Structures are given as C-alpha cells and as structure tokens.
Image 1 (cartoon, rainbow, N blue to C red):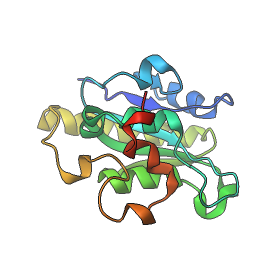
Image 2: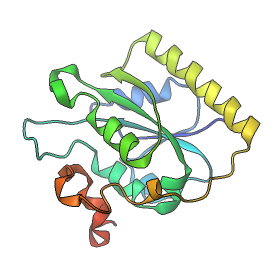
Image 3: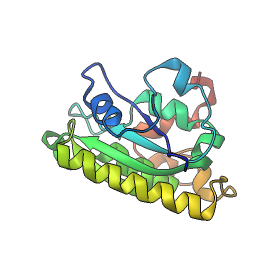
Image 4: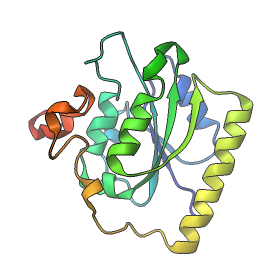
Length: 175
C-alpha cells in the first residue's frame, strides 16, 4: 500500500524536520528548492509550522509552503494538513495550518507543539496509516478541481484576507 508522503517546511531549528522524520514515511522538506519547485505525484499531506513575530500583518505561513501551493496540481492533490506551533504565539497558535486548511477545504489531520512528544508521533502515525488505508480503498487518483483549488487568497474578499496568502495571488513572485 502506498504511504502518503508528507511535504513539510522546517526552519534551521529542525523541530518540524525531526517530527516528520520520526513518522517513518516519505518526507520532503519545502525549505529545499528541489522540493518546493516540484509537483507531488499523488495525494500528499502538508506539515507546516506557524510563525508569528508580533505583528498582525506578519506572515504566518512559511514562504516555501506558499510557493509549493502555487501549483494547481499540488493544491488539488493535497488531502490534509498537519500543524506545528508554539503556544507562546497565543491566538496565532497553529494559524498557518488552520489558514491553509480553511482556504483549501482540506481537513486539519493533527496538531502538535514544537517538535511534538512521543505520543504525538504515535498518534500522527496512526492517523496517517488510517489515511493511507482510506486512500487505497477509494483509489488515489486526484479528484476533480473545485473552487477550493484556487490559490489560497484568490477571489472575492481578498482585501480582508491575511497578508500571509498574498504570494499566491502574485505569479510574478512565485519562482
């Protein structure tokens, strides 16, 4: 059975990378140009941290994630989102994960703090195994495009949306 790969972004701290690598499945770091400029070959899950440095207009979604999601193929093939956060960010805890999930219409599969605990790793492994089984039972072909597949932040009401999605509205900024 195919293991659903996880595309993740990890800063130099390596906290998210450590968690991703403990899941025991294919993982790809979107901090690396090779991966963020690629297209997923089937269903995949996003693992993203949230960053917040004190300004409500600050981006919380990492640039590497935005660039990967600029591809319509990648948006269509994404089947869920996992979030890493820091409770010190208060209301912004897990914001990147929740924004991507909300705007894409995909579910939040799991959330954990910092690099997670052994229980977090086990629980996420269980959830991912269930996802693999469900995808195998229903086939793994990407579904047809829906309005949720438009770039995060595109469409009506753009002015009221957080600035963390602006890159996807500007193809000239996507490399």
